[in-house]
Image 1 (cartoon, helix red, strand yellow):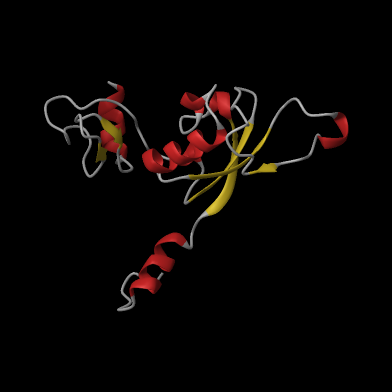
Image 2 (cartoon, helix red, strand yellow):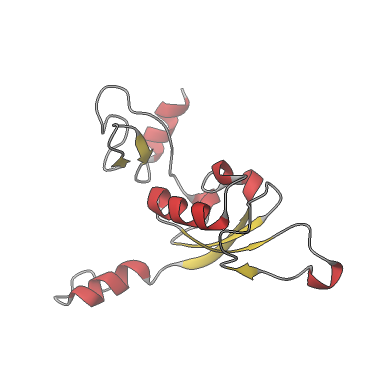
Length: 140
């Protein structure tokens, strides 16, 4: 939607308008699992940079009984992420349906990472969604 528009704001809006809010337990997450023990702010910034997802809230597993359905929106740097936290994030697709793969390239900054993001040291941070054939080859 809007990708063929001459107006830059319409192209940007079209690109991002498909985002929805999803949730996943931190301990089960490829996007957020590595941030266990880190602050919410750190996890939000780095997961956006690495995967393009926007961590917006968290539901800690251990809350007083009358707060059990509470979602903390942007709890800030004082909230330390725990394996049992439920993460709420904006993304084009659910993590479970995403084909993002993390890992290191073999010979070049983009080997095994077609169109992916690479760091200054040449490590691949995240790749674009892979085709079914690429996923099967990687599993072998």
